[in-house]
Length: 154
Image (tube, rainbow, N blue to C red; front, side):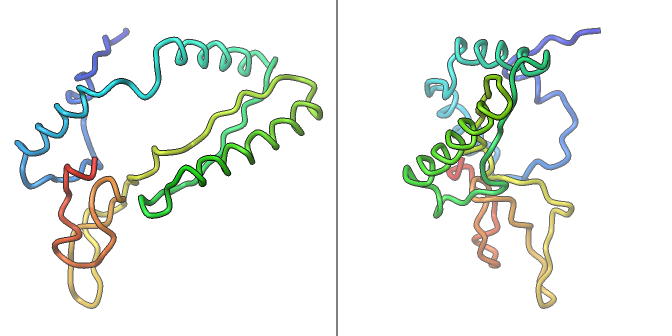
């Protein structure tokens, strides 16, 4: 049984790691603004990557994925992106010669600004606050203001 997909279909799924934003109307306004921006990845690029993944699954290419497990806004820059791509390209050259087949390069970047947590709360020295869920959700500082999920961080 196939289910139809739409940009809103995820809202019907059970959510276990969703931050609780205190102002739903503010969140909705930010989501509306973001929805009006052009896509980060275009349809043709997605189709080409899918074709390349098919080559990988058929054993005719190798997949190389690289990037940070967690990212912070403070450490994110054009230089960091450039350096990560440089390392991926260098690795791909070596792998292409070693494996004798094309290498599909996938950068893991700008998608690790939020992370799931095993608990929605964090306790330090007897004080319990919402867990830090990543820079795109709330602040790392252990104080009430920093830990409130803020849609403007999206």
